[in-house]
Image (cartoon, rainbow, N blue to C red; front, side, top):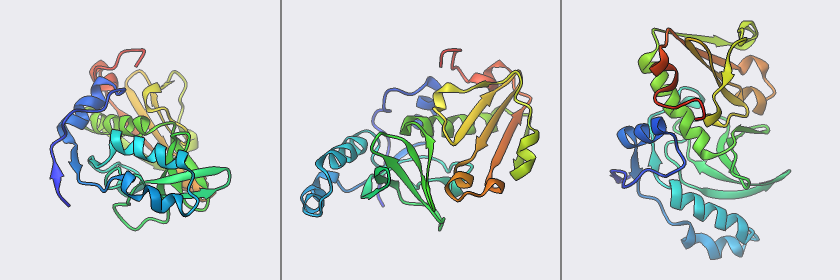
Amino acid sequence: MKLHLINGVPDGLTRRARSFVAAHGVKADVRPVEGHRQWWLERDIPAAVIDRMEASQERWGGLLLPPAPPYDGGPKYLDPDSPEADSPGWWYEAGMQRTAVPYSFMISLSGEFGIHGDEWASLHATIEGWVESLALAHHASVWARQVTKLVGDDIDGIDLNGFAPVREVMGLADTWWRGPDSLVALYGGEAASFDFPRGRIAVISSGLDEWGLRGGVDDDG
């Protein structure tokens, strides 16, 4: 696999995420989606699905970022492939897994980023949200004075009174919350995909100052 420096960070990201991608991301060579179009059309893949994959590849194709804290690191790099149909619609692969996990990283036709195991679980409303979550996890790990991990039923004891959702991650099954001096990441994708509540994970990054809480993202970020 040949890697390249990134020539331009996709727009639509916060300053924190742009800095993260520029500093820690590289690009891998990927096979163009267009080269498979006719083969997929002959197998009844709708043209709209292929168009969506092509647009995704133009924006994100080959982007390799540091491993995510959950999901055994997430996809190795972003590369749309393997469109498939299932109720209630179409998905395509977001990128190959870094390790042998019992699910695939997928993107829905509406753009949601998630995992597909026993069931589909939307993690973030967009790929941008996934990238923002990686950037925020990296930022929090650098600036937090203490990091605490909770699993399963222990998560129910977390008091989020006074916390606000971190909007830039566009969280669905996975959400981030910002408090007075802490960031809380709640990872619920595996629990949702396999109907396994004990698979929930929370990571609490505490002892954060204003920069640690936001990393240059203002209140509207």
